[in-house]
Amino acid sequence: MKLEVTRVEVWIASLKDTPGSLAAKLDMLSSAGADMDFVFARRSPEKPGTGVAFLSPVKGAKQAAAAKKAGFKKGKRLFTICVTGPNKAGVGAAITDAIAAAELTMQGFSAHVIGRKFVLHIAFETSADASKAARILRKL
Image (cartoon, rainbow, N blue to C red; front, top):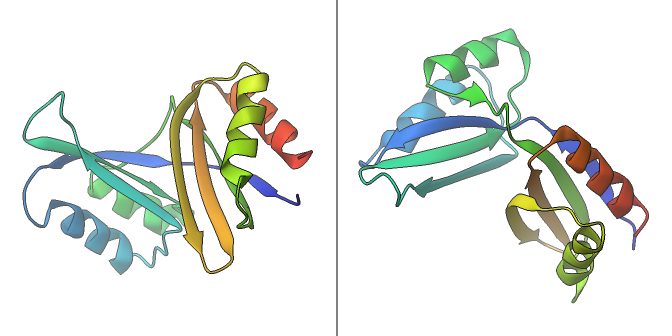
């Protein structure tokens, strides 16, 4: 199977668990011209009343300034790859099997199907692990 695998820089922000909290942050980025490929937000059950948002990409100084103003920081301990390819039954299992066979631990996994393609973001604990996973997945 032909997969496209790229490293991505993910930015992270804390959220208040209130209506409009994420919208306000995304509005700041939108006004700076940001066009996000990936946004994921969730409540933080370990810290009631809060949440966390992850997004990418942030391009250029203007967008970086807007992201920082909105409370986002580059994920210093989050090493992420984006994997895209044709959507077929079993592709997710093949990807996770290859990662498991390499004895790599995933820190996060998010997958979506858009039309006939899938888009997958996988986060790892180290840059070396993300690089190793990228090499392995390019060979699938």
